[in-house]
Amino acid sequence: MKNQQSYQPISVLAEVWDNRALLAAAPTNQDGQKILAESLTQQDLDTLANAILKRYDKLDGLEDGLINAWEKCDFKPEMVENELGKEKATLIETTFSGAKNSQGELIYSPWVYDSGVNAKGWRDWKLGDSKTAEPNSISFKMGLKSLTHYYLTPLQPNFDPLEVDLDLASEQVKSVGGIHDADKLDFSTFEQRGGKMLIYQGVSDPIFSAVDLRDWYQSLQQAVENPQNFAKLFFVPAMNHCGRGATVNDFDMLTALENWVEKGKSPEQIIAKAGELYPNKAKQIRLCPYPKAAYYTKGEPNNPESYECR
Image (tube, rainbow, N blue to C red; front, side, top):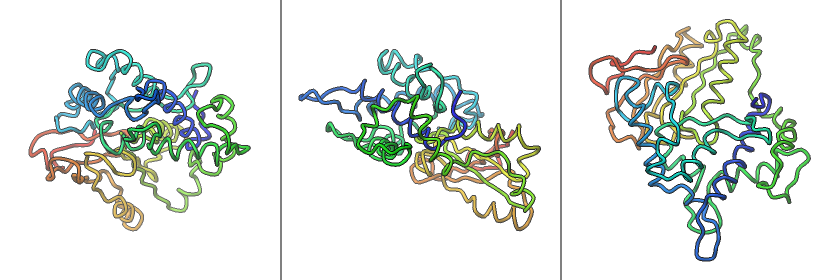
């Protein structure tokens, strides 16, 4: 079972897991040094994203580069083995299936096979673009160091984070996790005081898994009667961390929250417009409160009224 008490620190352990796998599979330069960024090339990621789109883009009724019905996806890396080869298909399976302990149990969530995996924002976090033996991905430069310099108790700043024992570290991050993690399920006081919460997440976020947040919200639905009365979750297809990616990442959650708190207008949809990297600048779509997703019905594909939440 995934640790339910330390989401942010445990995601740092997932970075250890990923970087170990990526380095093990990385090609070497003429000096025999590993080039982490080349463990999956841009062409590899484009092939992966295109295969995902080809199979699942139409599930929401419209092929537009956005997979709204992402929970219906059953992609397996073996589906691109002919194009990428068995070793890279295995590497994709290893990283996307989630970090595990020595018993093969998940210590962090798996990742969604979504169309945003070939975006620059995804590469910047997971792989970087360094052509030298010094990786420059955010995960490698910042994530790994944050483990040994901050999250572990006791601190181990001189220890190589790639050498940590994931079983032991899963326990050693719990203390700091108690400071950071918004993982509790008791919102009785918050709700009684009229509090409202809008949560959004990119389905292609490379640092915090959309599956992790979904699982937390599902736990909230089981623990609290009608949690949608005070907390709503919106997933944004193809969006990377904090809004990046070729997607519809131009939306206004703040006004929706103000209208909910001040006017009692519950947000049953959020209109999202094309971001700067999405090729169709006229695109607009509905973001729907989970577990609903936007499905195209009929009409102009750029008009959010052509979609319904179901």
